Image (tube, rainbow, N blue to C red; front, top):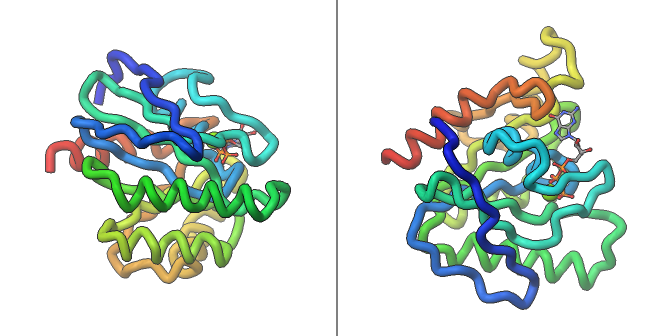
Length: 195
Ligand code: GTP
Ligand code: MG
């Protein structure tokens, strides 16, 4: 995959009408602070087009990045952000749900899990929900630079088992810092777009 041009084309808040895109979409879901926006920057080869923050709850809109006028990367707000009040959390949840349920062009959903942690109840729920919507979630174990190389296989296994993932589910360890795993993600996207 060669990234020629990228453009933040659509930003949707809680009350926005979702775009009726004609190009395929690939969405990135996961807990707040897991590294969704950072992964999207790494894939786009841009330092900070997608805004990131050490504070969870940075992305509060659904952002559609047009890549090469060929497809969209869709940055979703994180779930499980403890500081947001319940009403706000519920609204974000509904917005994400509405998007994943109604998009006609959604090709795949990547689910990001921090490689250092056991998946939470919310992560499991999201995994099941994505399955229920008819997608096979592609699991990304983020922040792999935080572990030693020798710790990674076991951590990947913990992520997969913790999610009660399908046997043949793909888990890709990734680091936005070192860009490890990026080629695998490009290959997956190429295959998704070709299929
Ligand atoms: P929300 O928008 O709040 O849902 O978060 P997000 O999932 O988009 O996370 P974001 O990309 O904003 O990253 C959160 C924090 O984790 C930032 O401080 C990033 O620099 C850091 N981070 C993201 N990816 C990595 C990674 O691969 N390695 C390391 N070490 N830090 C990372
Ligand atoms: Mg974000």
